[in-house]
Image 1 (cartoon, helix red, strand yellow):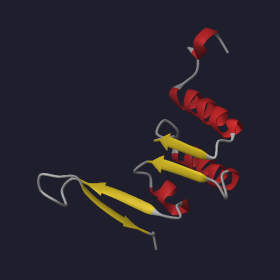
Image 2 (cartoon, rainbow, N blue to C red):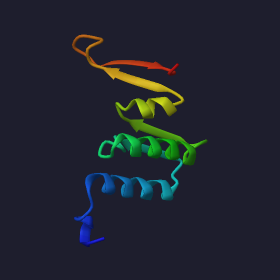
Image 3 (tube, rainbow, N blue to C red):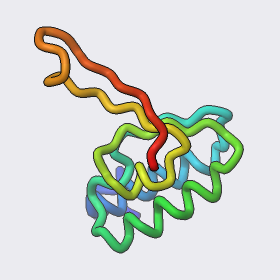
Length: 95
């Protein structure tokens, strides 16, 4: 790695940051679009492995990816179009 990781691609940088977060093993981990810069095949592997590594601990993921929704215990969707003039929120468990 060069200084500051400048030679890394966006996906490589994203995976490095995610690996550091997983190694820290916090009780609660919050991720925002943790796989937005990787291809679909890599995303599927990352999602599967993060779910296994974080089993039994709280992990909050902000993402539109159906792969992340697929491993979620609970899904909360924020939909501004639901309630005119306010932020709509619906909580549910994916089927």
